[in-house]
Length: 192
Image (cartoon, rainbow, N blue to C red; front, side):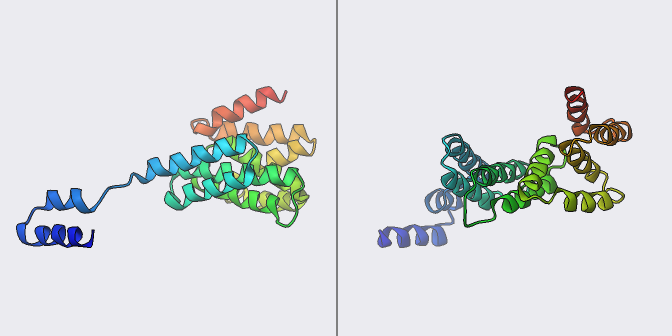
């Protein structure tokens, strides 16, 4: 085996055959496809309620493909898995907090998915810190208009549907052409 490697290496160096060398020594890996495959395995494990295996697969997907819009889905799936463990009352780890971090990462990479915001608010509810998060996001909404979505969803979760609808309606009027706006409109219609 070692002999074959040196033979190929010498052939590449002395024969100037880059196409032969590339095919012989390197097999390209499609990172996007590999990450998607691990994400899909994670989804299967999640659906089978094998949450620890799902976490492992989502983390592998994120390790392969960490910083793009597609990885926002991987962060969201990881967060949903942590939420499932938190809802089960799994002991020994702050699963609801880890879910929050995952959803915040998903939103940072793709702020146009209303489901990510809803999941984030679910993580606040499980941690029992919605009041604290409401204060934080209310202050932040003057700098970041997407924070008003979080504030509205917290209000809605607390039963203040009128304040939630007002904030979401203002967002729709201010940003009518954003991708998330259609989802917010549907949410408003469903919550009436």
